[in-house]
Length: 135
Image (cartoon, rainbow, N blue to C red):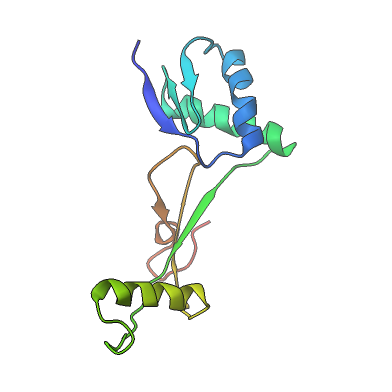
């Protein structure tokens, strides 16, 4: 039996708990193994997507979709050697600055994905050439 592996770390605990019942109702009894972090299933991503959606709807008690969001920001900061003798010290100093509220970027890159998917979709995918959101 060919099993495909997917991560489930982005699912809610309640959704993950409801997933086995949903898969069993869909006829997948004995065709999957759920671990702490993922699932091995004798099926494809389309089927798993439907099952995850149904499980999360049970968890949230209404219809909807679970969307994972990631923001990536970029910036630069000069760290004098008087404050950090090594490159590692400079990294740690920069991390401390950001952790303490130093502003990194006003225009972060945003990407989204489904909870079991590893492929992030950049927000510009949903925009036309002028940067307007496509509906």
